[in-house]
Length: 129
Image (cartoon, rainbow, N blue to C red; front, side, top):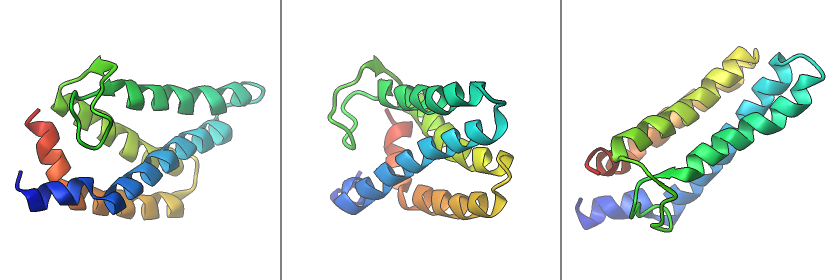
């Protein structure tokens, strides 16, 4: 990657947007659980599902990922990490859609696609590691 490309993937604004999208994704999974899981299990599901997704997100990491601390709990090849990220980000869109929040799902889809386009250099980095 050139220094210009690397700067785009890891600049503060992109990292902040990525963090917000991560948090929004976890909230979307919680919303889906609340709207679709029958009571009293919904109380458990609304906590367990986002925690499980967050655990996977934080644990399965690529060593020396410049967008993270560089440490990795469970060493994961870059292409597998990319699949996890896409599953979480676009799974959040699906969760909103399945929770009958279709307008919110469409807007989140637009934002997620725009982010992925702007983060093309990160995708390239993941595919090469």
